Image (cartoon, rainbow, N blue to C red; front, side):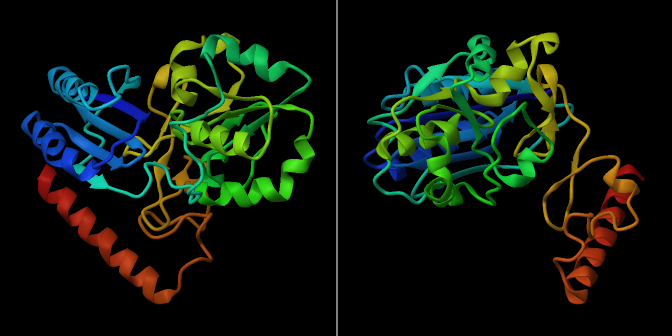
Length: 296
């Protein structure tokens, strides 16, 4: 059963391109698959492989500048959740588009999962989900504000339009693995918010460590690999992915008359034209043929 490790670290990399060859070489040599982003602000990735391979790649990353105390979240997948290994150089490891935001200089206060429930239950705390709308749709914390963003780059504009609603309140933010909410805390500090908190290790850490009987999480957590979603204890969830739009699809949605496997889901039924649908149908027919050959 493959081990899946999700990690990130904000740390200055003056020349991230110089780090790429060594990282790609060790990952490929170990048969590890997944995606790793490198930028001048640090590293972000999710990888999968056997125990020895994951340990070897993480050891290599911990030897990179500023990464000795790298944290990561682990789970397991029933099958390999990635097809290949990709190491890419990006402008940001999580794209906000605000050049003045520097998480290596200032971020909010970390809150461990064991202390999260008490914080978000406080009457003077506003809880904000920094993920995208399709992620929030399948699960979130009770009472959390949903910015309704389609990408993380939309968050600053949402805050500029809505920040006054939270005046005088402490702000607690969360995301899947911790990276988006950490960067968002840096942004809010720059906007003059006095007290900003974020969930250490994100939702993945919370689901993995807080007993379900004590959990304030409702639903499942979207993940960016072929598992699509996970639940308590990071067990695989119920969702699959729409091959047209990429949104998560529940078992209930598959019974909707608008659902056509590989072609459309109820959420994207009005988003594509006849030519796109024809292309999706041909792709789905090819996929079914390929799968039949594998099992035949």
